[in-house]
Length: 524
View 1 (cartoon, rainbow, N blue to C red):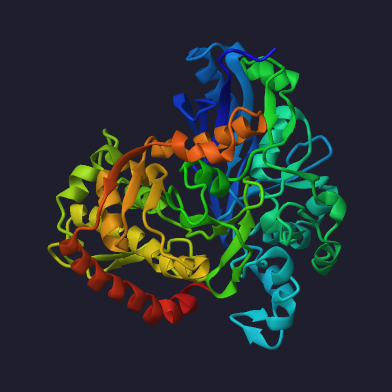
View 2 (cartoon, rainbow, N blue to C red; view 1 turned 135 degrees about the vertical axis):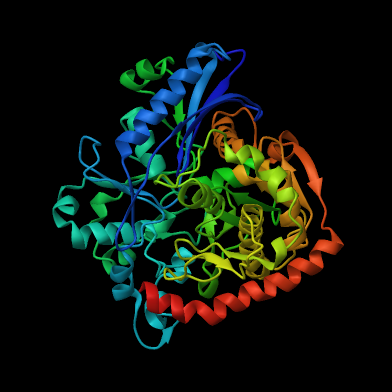
């Protein structure tokens, strides 16, 4: 018998932690709980996380949330997980991880990708005839940065052969958490995209491609069965239900990775409606009705949870993570000179940055702390401040970081709009960065676009996962989503600031062009 008030327990697994949220089938976030998780950065481009820590954080956040009884546990009818795209977990037959997860920032697999895709004639590092084995089928190919799932698998195969041998399946992080919830091995079509072994030419009939699997010398038995994001994977297993405090008949919907859930949670589900996400990383994307590839700028049509549609997927490595780096590694670093950090600095960002003139006194920040993916695929780029003077203050540093992070999506926007064949205006803005009104205005000024700050922007991924579940359970359709999402505030470009940012953006691009060879020399 259907429950009178069905709700979704949505899980938003990000790089820095796990958020559990109670969401109505119409997308209203009623309550949420958050637990931080750690990440280990290793020499040579390693970036690992402990899957057991993810699960502990998920259970703790979800159990605390359910215990508050914002809704009665019996009214939670389904769970749906959103998680970071291109984070890979090797598990044994029991579903236990065999090593730490390799995150979307781990680039150690790059040499193995380059060995497979290089050749003559070469275009930006790709052998033309090699990459053309992928593009018609997958819409792209293994990126040279080595941060895709397939690069992680190749790294394990070559550097950790015993782990590869003992691996039962390689799972995207979302699907590992689904396995923990249900005991079932499976993945969604969209979460498997960055393994680069699926034929997506018919987006309604995606399947593994034996020739691509053979080209990569992979064992196809180590790849999970696939289904649609809206499919019901099963019910929550007894152990998980008891730990969280929900009934065992709660259904788990397969759901999608963070790119796809963010898009849906932003309300930008109609063709050519753009959304900008700023969390640890950033991207600017749109749902599109066609398959296309821009190899040179790392933009491609990927499957989305919406039947018959693609999404113009791209990503920039660091965005909100740059502010975290500024606070954690520079301003409040834990050493003998540490400044007392008795307050949350993020609470004061708008007040500080809002008091700095546009352009931060010509201080320019480069946000490439971990290399870059779009519109250039370059792991050796690095960040920094340019044009610092004796009058530069902490306030200017904060303002410059926010502006530099905005210059980066403007750089991508040019190629994304060329990719989809039209201007993205207005743009729905979501993610933790969208909570800042000052940042919303900076993005409007830098990009010369109307920026729509969506209501509860930090909950967009959880809301998107809940929407996918609600569609899968038959409560709504994807066509209903635009009317179910709310705009908090609209920001228009300020003509006076536009001139300042146009001049500094030109310098920003020149700094990339003139210094990329130096970065390569220092960081290869």
